[in-house]
Amino acid sequence: IAVKQLILSDGAHDGFERGQAAEAELALLSSLPPHPCIVSFHGFCRRKLPTGAELSLMLDYCAGGTLADALNGSGPIAASSLRQSNVVLTIFAQSCAALAHLHAQQPPVAHCDFKPENLLLYYSHASSGLGSVGGA
Image (cartoon, rainbow, N blue to C red; front, side, top):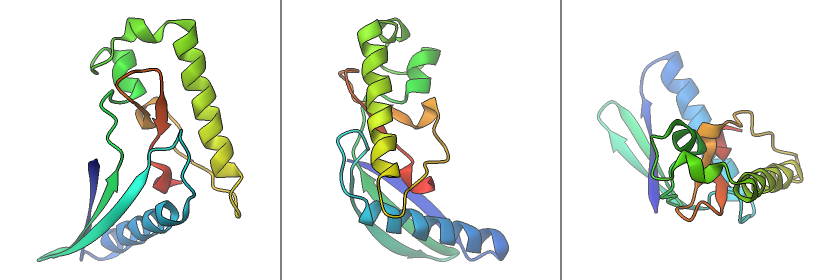
């Protein structure tokens, strides 16, 4: 399990916008039907802080890091292993399946931040999961 922490300050406009974005992310993750190519949401907790609040989201842990890390050579998976055509095609197909699942929802969900930094790799590198879905 990985924990994504969102700090929500009591600050004026910025704190309000972050709070709204965090609540929208929580609502989307809570209602989205599971899919094998989207990082799974397992639950959340809220905690009051002296300067606002903290929202913690429990998600699948992807030990392979991000696709961006792997391509830059800074992740646990070597960039050379990603150059194999079957791995490239697998990651591409899984990304397409994840986006198709989002677009099939009623109403459709647009990811809006689809990039290598949001493609998380499971350590086997034979599978990937789309992350940051709540920012859709």
